[in-house]
Length: 65
Image (cartoon, rainbow, N blue to C red; front, side):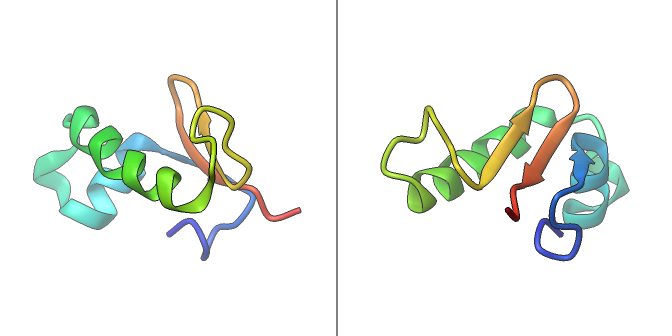
């Protein structure tokens, strides 16, 4: 999803619905658990990500610049 929509902010609800299905729409904690290892694999310093950006309270964005 991030690659398909590079540069756009995707909401937590969009991720949960598209990846895990409509029954998971309110399980934001699961999404954070999933994103954390992705971020660790892409960046030496996960607290300062370059590619997988968290938009606080909204969702995630893949930086494409």
